[in-house]
Length: 153
Image 1 (cartoon, rainbow, N blue to C red):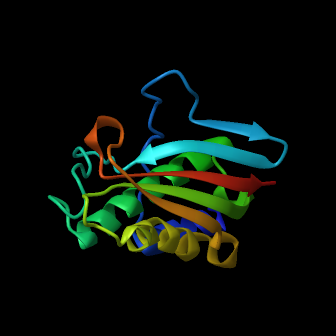
Image 2 (cartoon, rainbow, N blue to C red):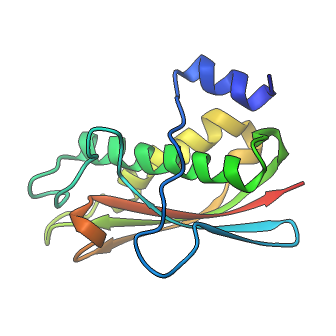
């Protein structure tokens, strides 16, 4: 078993099947050693976390939603690496989007749920550049969406 797969087991993270696109796009595109992964929503096997952060979703739940996005990103990374997550050389950048209420300003704290997971899984190679943006609405009403750029070998 790979080092990263062992780490996922240690963390209690079970990767789902990669989520299929819901519109006219592909889940990831590889250009050389760089992979751009389409935005992953806060979806899990029981439906995920939907709602507006600061209105009907609290900060703790929103951070869990961002972690779900991270788990879905890992599933896409695994697919992009032909099943071998040890091929991820670096998480280069995350782009985080939070469906935020009008008074909610802790957008970066929400996206930490995904950022922290990348560092837990990949160590220093999981440290990344990032943007964290509050938006009016996200697809299908999900609370959080995160996309990624990763380097693979």
